[in-house]
Image 1 (cartoon, rainbow, N blue to C red):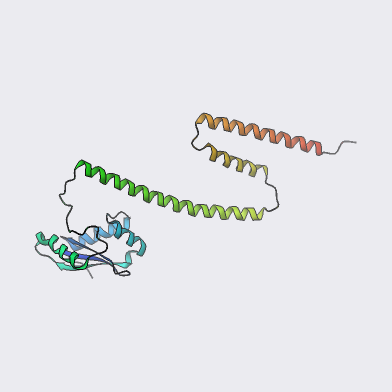
Image 2 (image 1 turned 30 degrees about the vertical axis):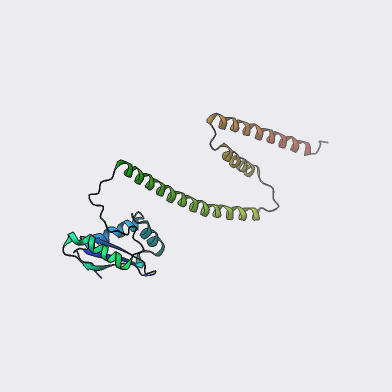
Length: 210
């Protein structure tokens, strides 16, 4: 159903779970466009509605007009009427109120800012954990395939060097530049000794000349 440009009380309904959100607007069509713009972008201020949208997708949601309100001064009171009647599950507040023109104290603004940062950090960490899990599985599978293909075969010098570099990179994380320089020098000397030992062994294995 196409929404009118008039105002009133509306509901955003999840057609799968039958959960819903109730709100009011001066312009139904404009409000719908704003809701779904933020939902698609993943930054809707109503986290309950955003979580449901992420889970069920856009096709699961419909916006329906509950009541046309000609006198816009009655919007909040009519919104409260419908909220009390149906008790919407996606609303964050139990009292209908508008944020337009609302002024916040410095303390309230600080708390809101800190809460937004915590939410952003949580979402960022969840994304990183999921990314690491996926890439970790890919890396482990590749390692198992490589290990199976090389079963019984010794590592080449290049592969040993790569493993050693990976180990050192892990140990060097968070160390100073001076410490990293020392570790690098130590690694170089270690590999020089190993190469020298290998050459001596090869020379000893060579048959004596007649």
